Image (cartoon, rainbow, N blue to C red; front, side, top):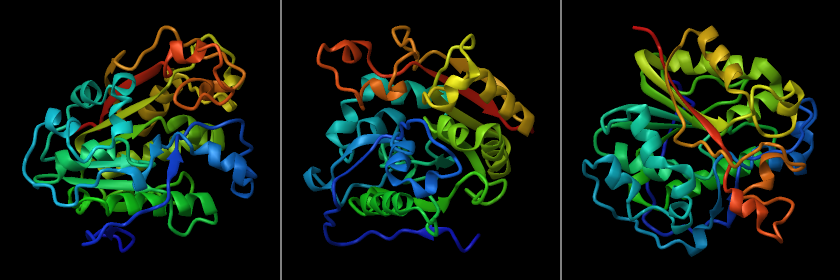
Length: 314
């Protein structure tokens, strides 16, 4: 195994990390200067996962029973943060993971897990019989935000023994691609990240991501992806700054890497989302970047997203 893989051991004492809101929704970004522009960069990765990662207010459960559990039990795990549960109606974790076909004995890679919204479900599900790799930001990044975000995620993993076996790897298009040992993963998952890679690196960023996913998966392994859907009839330029991305581009990039499209789902669709706001996808909950005094964006709800399942050929 690559030496960069970090095996996390649980701490015996409570670690109170700083509050850290991370919602990887991002504004217009110039990929050439993103590493030097901290305010822009913060927003670029703000939807890496989710807002509300308040470790200081969490009701910690450091000593959970590590035993096999069903997907429903994992979604209902007591280690999940209340503010995470509050978004289940918008993010549909049970239906989404069931659609992808996840099983408790799988080796799974979660790419750019952010503050751990999905990790809170994946780690308990896989703790007894499976393996979870968390492909986070590079530890040697020149970006202060990347390093801080990764550090906060590591602090989060120390809050319960249920996260003790999560193994951190590294991913960044163009530099860090070994998200798991080659051919070892049964499933690679990434949630609301594709638009970031496109906004930072264009089509090349998507291609590099798909190649990394393909390499990590075993033959027959599954790639599951969710992201904010830009209508196909909209100008391509809108994807450069809106936080939305066209489904057809993602399908093309995945197929170019060798994947086969197995199925698509409207589990995370929202017909009320027009994808046409001055603040991009961040106008909607949970970010509400421009405010919402009349409740318009709250009524719309979270973004409309595509949910795609691919397979690496046998």
